[in-house]
Every structure is written in C-alpha cells, then in structure tokens.
Length: 385
Image 1 (cartoon, rainbow, N blue to C red):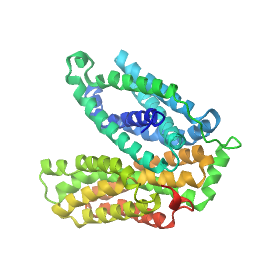
Image 2 (image 1 turned 90 degrees about the vertical axis):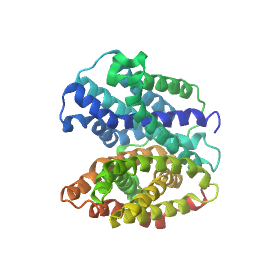
Image 3 (image 1 turned 30 degrees about the vertical axis):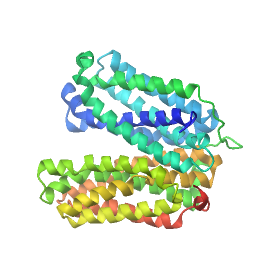
C-alpha cells in the first residue's frame, strides 16, 4: 500500500455502505409500517442503479476521467447520506436517497476498479484489486453492523434507525478529500467511446463471456447468502445452528479469502488462481446439494474461499486484455451485477417448490460456466502477476 493506492482503498471501503441497506430494511419496515415487498425496495434500488447506470458511467469516466467520476460518486453518496441525517425523511424521499446512494456506488465501482490499475505499480494490479475487494468486504460487514449498533450510543439515540448515516457521511467526506488531492496518470483511449462502441466490445467472445461470467457469479453469490439458512434448516440443523453456519460464516470466510488473495497472487498467476477458485466454488456447491449437516458446513467454508476472488480476478484478467477500454469494460461488468437480482428469482422458485437442496443446482450451473471460462482465459492473463 502506498500514498496513491490508499485513497482508492478508502473508496472501496465506502462501496460497502450500500450493503447496509439490506440489514436496515427491517427497521425501515417498522418505522413506516410497510409490507415486506415495500421494505425490500431499499436494496432493490441499489441493484437497479447498477443495471441502469453502469454503462453510462463507463462512458462518462472515459470523457471526464476516472478520478473525477470517483469524486462524483462520493459526492452523490455524501448528499444521499446527509439528507436523512439532517431530517426524518418520508419513505419516498428515503427511497430517492437510497437510489442516489446506489447511483453513487455504481460510479465508485465503475471508476474504482480500473483506476486501481493506474495507481498500482507494474504487475501489482491483480493483487491490489483482490486486496481492495477484501477491504470492501470489511466495509460491507462493518456497515451492516453499524446500521444497528450505532443507535445504542447516546449521541445518536434520537436518530433511531438513521443513526449510522452521520457516521457513513463522515467516512465519505474523508474519502472525498483524500481522493481530491490524489495525483494519478490515467490510462485513456485515443477516441472517446460511445454506447455503440462499448456494446461492440461484446463482439469479442472473451469479453462477452466475462460479462456473462460476472452476471452469473453475482447471481450465485446472492443465491448462496439468501438460501443457506432455509437449506440448513431443511437438513436438520437447529435455527441457531442454521443461522450460525449460514450467511455469517460465508461472509466471514469470503472476507478472509479476499484479504489473503493478494498474497496468493504473489505465487500464482491470475489465470491459474481463477481456475482454482472456480473449481473450488463448484465443489463447494455440490457439497451443499448432498444435504448433510457436516458437508454443508464444509461446503459453506469452501464456498467462501472459492467465491472470494472471482470478481477481482475476472475483472483484472479482462481489463488487461484491453487496458485502453478499461472504462467501457468496467461499465459492462458492473452492469452485470444485476445478476444478483435475477438469478436468485430462479432459485427462489425452486425453493418454493420445496426443493431446498436441489435448488442449489442453480448456483452450481453458474459455476460450471465459470469453470469453462477459466479454462479459456484471456490471451494476456498468463503474464499478469
């Protein structure tokens, strides 16, 4: 970590703030007397923002620069957090703020992933991006915890469920200042891209496969976190045990795996690490399908390790194929995060049919695709260290 990468790592921490909207949904539901569907609009707006604004954000980054887009994203997030800090918003206004937070986070993702290449020493991009995703995981976990814990402090007691917003705002403000004074020489394309030129990248088979890979990976991850609890209950675990060895264990191992991923990349090339990760993830999901409590726990642990570095590895391998198109590729791959809203619907339908263990064939199929993609790889991925 150096003076140039530190502000970008801070930006990755702030990307995790949007993940606190899920845990906050129950408190919002009680505050506004909502049904479950209306309450889940908070995290839904975040996914929608990625689907709609990722490609335009990539085009904007190519025109104004990744640093300016990063600052714009931080600015939008600061406003989105400041409004509910200062006033008790109506539900419509709150949703508007969450949508703004989703847009801002989209800009952070689209600009933050490729700008890490510009601030990283030669050959350190994949390692730094893997570590940054670990930092983002810590930010997600901390944000989800703060969303409920901060309200217990006397100074924030009157804010109730809004107590975490001023803390998030201060973090965003500090990150904005650190990025503002960052000096970076950005990789730029010779001619400004357009939507047509961005979408034309999908004519390259590997780029198309990579975008689909991100779509399926994010969908598989959300499937795992959403349906581990009912799976564990269906195979005989007590409610307490089912919760303990479900999503919390997965996220813990996932964060650990992302942090050590940068160290692993000093030994393995991104392409080989990607192959190992996809195979490990597939084996882990198959263990979940077997339906044994012991194998389920082992499967959750292996899922965390296998899933941990898929995003940074696939992202860095893809961008290194054509660095001058980093902004457009980032926009396309961030748009594919919408898989987290679509793939779980398929699995949810199977769970509704009482196919709890068999339903995990959905993320398994996603990982079969990723294994195939890892065997194909990119032309330059073997030489990235």
